[in-house]
Image (cartoon, rainbow, N blue to C red):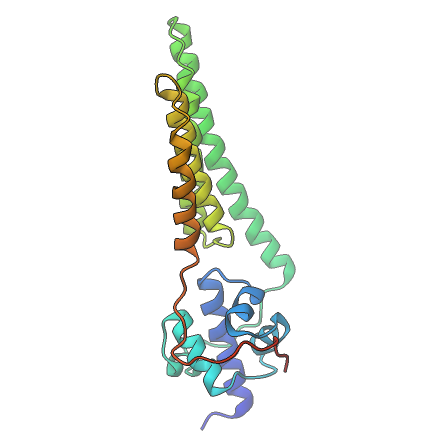
Length: 208
C-alpha cells in the first residue's frame, strides 16, 4: 500500500504536469479552485494533498479522473528551478521572435525585389501584419505559452480588420463596427469555463 508521503509526491507530480500542460499558472489554477497560489504551491511541493472534493474539481478542470491524479505514472521529479524555467522560456521566446521577424524579412525581401523592377507594393507590409501575429499565435500554442492567448487572438482579429481597412478602396471605417463585436466574441469564447456540478457559495480564498 502506498504511504501518505509517497501519495503526496505522486499527486504533486501529476498536478504539476496537468497544470503546466494546460498552460495555467499556480495563481490561475488557485482562482478556479478558490484557493490561494500558496496552497497550490504546497500541493506541488508534496507538503499537502487536496481533499476529495478538490480532487474531483481538478479532474473536471483537466479532463481526467481522480484515479489518474492519484496514480503514479512516472517517477517523482522536483519542480524545475527558476534558472531552468528561465532558460526554457528564453529559448522558446527567441524561437518565436525569430519566426515573427522572419515574416517581416520575407515581406521586405518581396518588397525590395519588386522595387528593383520599378513596382512598388506597400500592401505587402499590410498583409504581413496579420500574418506575423498568426505565426506568433501558432507558436505560443505549440510551445504551450497560453497565458495571454485570448489577447493574442484578439490582436489577430484586429489586425485582419486593419488590413482590410487599408487595402479596400475608400478605407471603409464601418468595418470597425464589426470588429467591436468580433473582439467581444473572442473574449467571451476564451472565458467559457465548465462549471463544477456542485454549487457552493463564494468564500474567501483558503490557505492550508
